[in-house]
Amino acid sequence: MNILLLEDEFGLRESIHEYLEDSGFSVDAFEGGEEAMDAIFSKKYQLLLLDVQVPGINGFELLSELRKSGDRTPAIFITSLTNIENLSKGFEIGCSDYIKKPFELKELEIRLAHALKMECLHTDDARVKLSDRYCYDAKNFTLMKEGKDIALSKTEKRILETLIKHRGSVVSIEQFQDEVWGEYMDPANIRVQINKLRKKMSDEIIHNVRGLGYKIDT
Image (cartoon, rainbow, N blue to C red; front, side, top):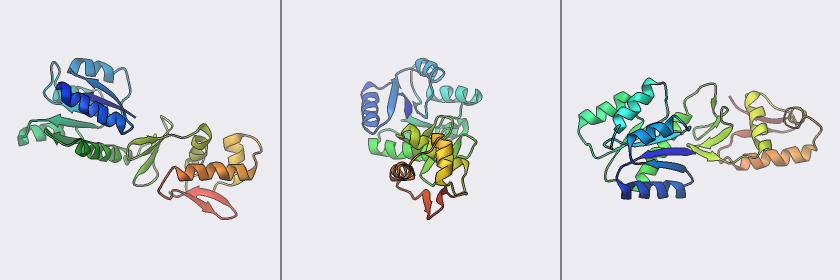
């Protein structure tokens, strides 16, 4: 998952960058607003961490321009500003959350996960909610748990997409053969692949309907 970080304080920028990458995120860090803006229009990010007071375009101005352009990427403001007017302004612009300096990096991770979870729960044609913690981004072919990507093989993605396509109905072994493999496949192997997928999701999302097949509930 790609995160953009805009922070002009070198030490804090490096600390956040290292912490989030150690947590499994891919982070692009910038000191100034202009270069951050250029990056956003050239690359897809799943979340923006924006310091308010930075050189050039500040965090408020940057997010305001993005919202005007139709970009709805979740954003968290990182700021030392504490008055209610600035807090109100940030939410009016369209941020997901605020975190006030100084802060613990663990708090940032918690707020980040919450913002991504809220975004994941938004229902649209491209993003399918599977449970309170899991969703599938059909546009980017990505399974997500509270905003973090879960690696899937090509076969696992096809299995999950087939179940989502027939959501609420049982998918038989024969249907998996036709829609995932396009040819006969040993039923035992199909069950092995489905069980591998189920183990990657701690929530009970894929249900085994004994003697019939598998299903995902509506």
